Amino acid sequence: MDTNYLIFFTIIMSFLLFLFQRTESKKRITVLIVMAIPALLIRNWIVFRDLESEGIIALFIALLLNFFFWVLIGRYNPVGSSDDIQVLGMDD
Image (cartoon, rainbow, N blue to C red; front, side, top):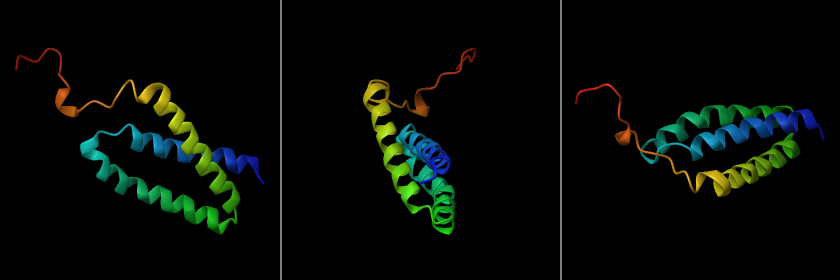
């Protein structure tokens, strides 16, 4: 098992899952479609380099890290809506 690839895959997969987790609910489908491109590229690279075990372990670690983030921070600080954003200094 190559730990360098494991760490790299964990970071990339954690970032993609975190991005999806912290996306506004109205934009989740768009983000999922856009995230599918790098996810498929990573998957193809894992298969091409014959690193399936590192990819599977990295996915489980990324899921665990994002679950802990959700439990500790995300549940108490939900994602806001873009409709609630107010620009300071506007007279509207």
